[in-house]
Length: 222
Ligand code: CA
Image: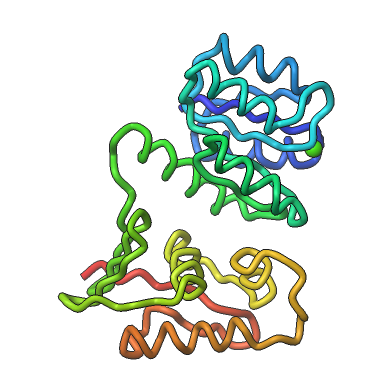
């Protein structure tokens, strides 16, 4: 799978490159907006990872230009925590997903795979584990035959955990990655949300508390 990585921060570019290469992707890197647009329109990529603040031409303008030219290559925006408006604008312009810095490599890989599957018609619109099934498009959830109504944040948190089964997330990471912006670090939002999810899935043990560390989703294959 060919990935175009557009990122001008050398440290991030090298981290992403190493990680994606290790996962079997081929990577082309560009650190300049104009060059990136040129590469994106002339090359053949399965997905573009696009930073927003870039020298030359910014990420949103690259995305806009691509979509105006009817180029439908999947785009995942790499955004800073503070770039909430740009994130929204990017999704409206036709980005397929976004990931917020700092992020884990596994999460990025999962998102790349999901976006590619989605756009190639292979569906990863549903995540499941045992009796629990969540549909990422309709944002509806089922446990066995019964529909479960999750609040939007509960759904997002569950989705976040389910996208990376087995991976431990600290409370702070979940707060940052699911809520996304400056909440009081002493807030108990994460605990409350996890508790509500557990209640709704009848204390199914799939969300494990790793004492002193955080939470992880244990996928049940049955
Ligand atoms: Ca940048």
